[in-house]
Image (cartoon, rainbow, N blue to C red; front, side):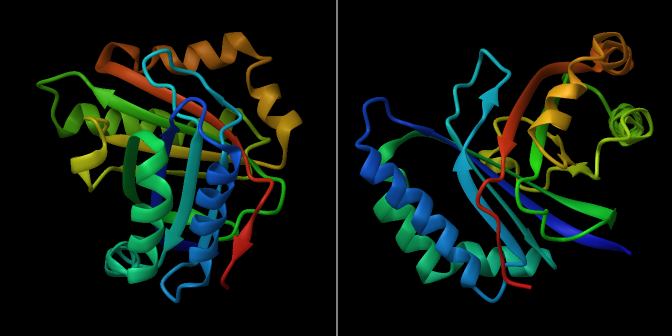
Length: 219
């Protein structure tokens, strides 16, 4: 069944030498927000790896909503604001957020427990227009055709630029588990051939791997 879902990704860079108990408090506090009525799905935890030398994020939150209004209500909710102000900001050096609407998303709204995610953020070169943007989105959308292990592919254009550091296109590839995630990189020739299709249009790329060992749902 296809549906339209609003995706919300937040990346956190926890300060070095932070007390592990404070990190646990941040993760637990964010995961507890899954109980809010607006949230369809929410998971928070440590990143498996960051495939970018420019950013050293340590943790990620992924959540889903029925609409932009629901995302806004979640963001403004007192419980969310309390966790951010009391548990997140005091221990983080950097925070980045990207939001997009995933049209015609097929598969479960709540990823299966143990799912692995490859998150990609793309920053286009200056001066490019909608034609080039659609070209890049088309390349990303075609990836699932070449990698059958991908259960679900979500992609779209960021609609919240304030905290996105100039990254305007995002995607999540959800796979059954860690072995399938690692297998993506085993076929280097195919991976590189897909990257080449859009390389000349891109200024910067962030690629992150996340294993959803804790998957909570409110559905």
